[in-house]
Image (tube, rainbow, N blue to C red; front, side, top):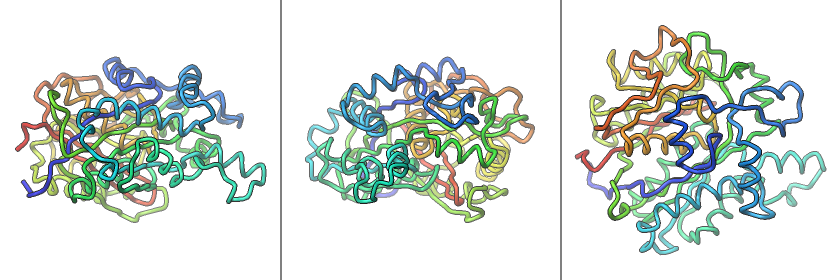
Length: 395
């Protein structure tokens, strides 16, 4: 292994369509039933009945009650951050404020606030502080008394995985002893109407790698993971082993059809961790349910892992495509899979496409010896990112 400090995933938290805690996400994986619903706060008639990864009204009321006067995006992010901090408290107790960092991943931050301010012709200088990614990151950093490096990543749907890589690099490079990586995005008319205009939303709900798939299901979520130089004492330890990124620069919104960009990101993650492809026990795919993404991803997996890839699934039927939160949220799912030995299925999948990876999981599958998991994401503009997690058993 390369000579560098270990980077442990010391704690995590999340709030998404299945519920506003990590245990709700774990339960949704076990059930393997799509958690997609309409979002009553959307005002455009064409969006009213679309199946989305929307947080329920009751959960939103609970989340907002926890931060009176706070914005929706802040309330959501804050819930995930608090849960991650609580889970990682032992690993964080010796970390000073000056050695604690924060990386925020988001594509739109407080887009609802920005839209409201625009309709009111509000000057840019008077925008609410949570409307803009950087000011939201600063507010979250103040919450956790972070005086170390603060960064904000907005790289479309690869933002979360790229933020994980950046956070791990800060720890590995000695810039911080711990970094809280948080991803958050919320649904809005602007976000959903944009995907609807691209004709990329499946009216029946996303069916990743399905033969009859027609598009994605936008979602909203926050997730947070504490990356630290030490693990929580007494708990089974998991590490972030390596990462890789690439940009195929194919098209503004369409992925490269040959999958070479994503294959390169996965190969770089494996090389960075000094892990052979055959050691990977599970892949959490980007798997949006769009025709071209899933086809590209299947080719990328084949290019790296050959004709017998490890078990692979997409969990976006459980959460929707949560944009800037996706990479962090799906990293949480990978960590939970290693903790429980239960590999997620592909919720919402009916009939797999003939070109889908042959190891595609339709239902959850027991794998008690899972030691290495790979999470991959791709985004508009041809951005790709891959994150590799492993247990202490991985030399």
